[in-house]
Length: 316
Image 1 (cartoon, rainbow, N blue to C red):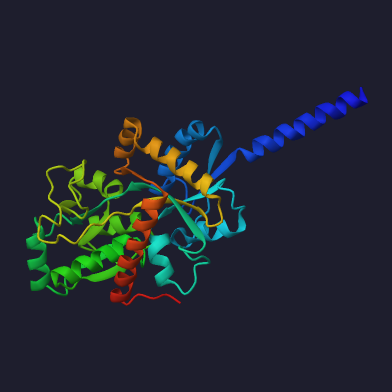
Image 2: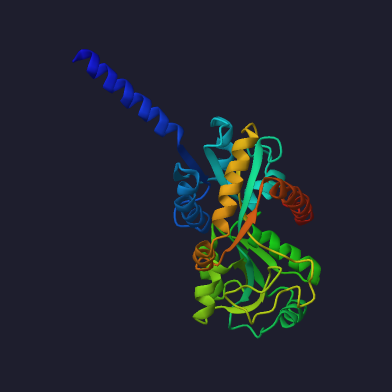
C-alpha cells in the first residue's frame, strides 16, 4: 500500500508539472473591462484550443501598460508568458519616460499584431462645427476658445491631436485626464470642445447625439460609421491613427515557440467569429506575424519618437 501510495503521488506530481507547463499567461497592463483587457480575453478563449494549452489573462496595470512589459524580464523566456501591449507602451512611453524598465527592441520579441482600435474626431454638438474645414476655420478664428482632452499625457488621444494640430496649422489647448471616461464626460459637458478617441469610447455618445462625429482619423472609413469621411479624404493623407494592440514575449524565447504563437494567433484573427466579436468593440482584427510585426514596430517607433519630440513632452 505504501509503495502504491507513493506511485500515485508521483503520478499526481508529474501530472501537475505537465499541466503547469501547459499554462500560458497573457498579461494586460490595464484594469479589467478596458478595451485591451476585453480583446485579451476574446483572444485567450480561442487561443487555448488552438495551442492545446490553458490560456489565462492576468491584469498588471500601471504606467500606461509599461508595468506589464517590464515584468516580462522576471518571467521565464519560454513563451508561456505573453503581453498584449498597446502602441503607447511599446513605441511612445520609451521615448517619453526616463525609464520604463525595458527596451522594446532588446528585451522583447514581436509575435503578432492583433487589432487596430481606430480613432475618431468628435466635437461637442453645441459648437457651430459640422465638418473638418469648419473646425479648422473656427480654431483659427478663436485661438483661445477651444480645448481638447486626452486620456493622459503621451496617449494616442493626446499625440494624435498634436499631429492633427500641426498639420492643420491650428492651436488648441491640451487638457490631460486620468483616462477616457472623465475626458468624455467633460467633452459632453462643454468644458472641452473637441477630441480624438477610439470607436469603443465614442460610439455610444455619438449615436445618442451627445457628440458630433467629424471624421475618422484611421486610414479608412470605420465599419461603425461607413458614411463618415477620413481625415485623409479631408486633406490630411498622412494621418492614420489607431491604438493598435500586439503580442510580445521575452526576447530570449525560442524562435520555434514565437513562430508557433504567431501562427496560432493569426489563425484565430482570420476567423469570421473574431471579426464579429471585434466589431462590437470597435476593433479591427489584424493577422501580422513575427517578422512583419517586427518591421511594423520599427516603423512605428520612428514615427512616434518624432511625434513625442515635436510635442516637447518628456517626463522624467
